[in-house]
Image 1 (cartoon, one colour):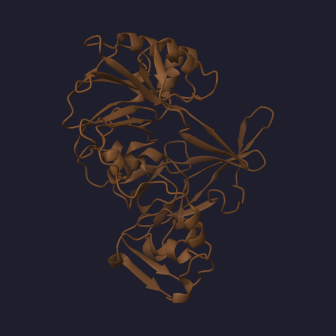
Image 2 (tube, one colour; image 1 turned 120 degrees about the horizontal axis):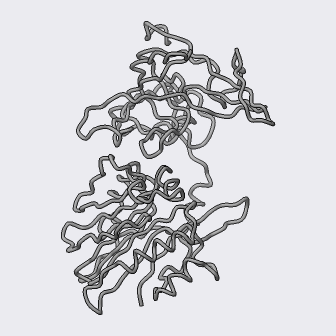
Image 3 (cartoon, helix red, strand yellow; image 1 turned 120 degrees about the vertical axis):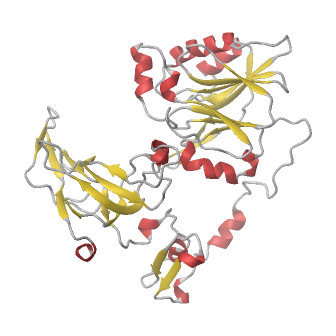
Length: 415
């Protein structure tokens, strides 16, 4: 297929290295190991106009994820002293991929993909471009993929639900072509109806009506705002709130901030949150992701409160309607708790009070089990006169066959 489409092709051999188990030093191999499809390819034949698919997650926040598909526009020549191409330029099908790193209003552009490192068996390391040719792919490979057009063959369906997975990848009937159609291949597992009846209801059928003079504040760890902004737009329980407080936005300083109809957005990225030159804060500053943001309803009367040069991922707003300060906080897992509490204390004592009736709400993700009997953060907040409002676990984690539940999200109200 590639020879009929691409007038120019080249074979990119993986760069494999043997790692010394004692010293950790790498020694390059003249010929890469022959490996299974579980690893990046030992030999990659590529060229302009080739259709490819990403094989690894590169940057979740930008949409560079496993199974993203596109067209190769250029194979960049090697840098001086290197035998491998500098990169492969790919124009992805989804124009939103890598959009936050491109200039606002710019047209759909190709993205540079560089070599990816992964470990092989027997103390070996491979450097290779995380892509493969993909004019066609298995149904298993396209799970989670969304596309405008697709040709789907139902010839080799061998399990319940496979046809559904394949057919539901396409956004409309106009973009769907089915070959080898056989209605016997479209079927579901007989246990599904039984299981659905036994499942407890998770969401209410109708959105809860907002009462007069009611203020709704939503707290959510979004873990990447750009890939999840459409989820917020579609969820009426969230989008009808007065304030939507988000932690782990994963937005950078130069990122084009995602808009939400009916809301203004204020944000503080991770890099800007740690101005100190101390090593502990510089290390936090260099780490990816993090960040906090608040979508504020257009009709809300509020003002953003600056909190000096504290080293903390935090936003503070004063809500005039309810005479309340709202303090949104995110504590990275690697942030030493004692140091974090010192910075949080400085924020709390700097929050202004309009009068004796001004209230303060502190909410966020503290990456600590707040419901434990002895939680250092909970004890600290209690000493400052705050009470924890959250009484049930907000996060679930599976460990072998046991369900471990713990609370890291917290809401504190000053008493």
